[in-house]
Image (spheres, rainbow, N blue to C red):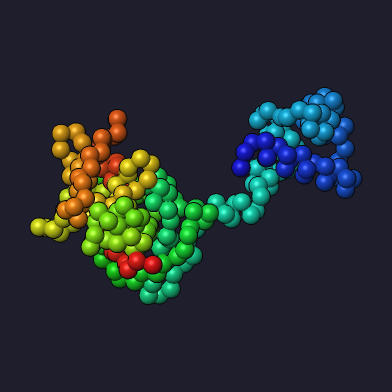
Length: 238
């Protein structure tokens, strides 16, 4: 929510109190130490308030910023995943670019909810490089056409990929097997086998007919910063 919207919501809250006879513009000016003209101009949308001015008005009216928020928008932006049941946990399905960049997946970015057995999720080992403890650990994305072709037949367009974002190291998950990752590329996700060589990230396809891609390591970052997470489950295409 933008600052001007908060100001408009405060303005409306003050008018509601004025119309209800709970306060007057003159009384509000006395309480805040502002001139009456200053308060009048704010109420009539001729000027705004500074952050300090808003704090004064909120304090004298016993309001908080939370009182100025739109409940619908708060709910939309919440990042609370509905609880699962005794046997299954809920994991959100989101867009690849959201999975790549957002530590917490807000409600407005949740496309759907998928269920996974708790025993399966609890059995997955972490290998975290850096501080990702506050990231939502598991998210699901759907493979796009490019990844579906380059990773065929292991991955197909539209297939779901469960990502463990607490596994971003380049250590093989199983000895002797290539680990499949979602990596950050151009602000979104791509699913590939990942290696690092000569200061570049190498994105290798499963389909040998598809080209190998080279991804420069972002300045000031480690290669593992560009690993979104390990692909730990692939579902059939939808």
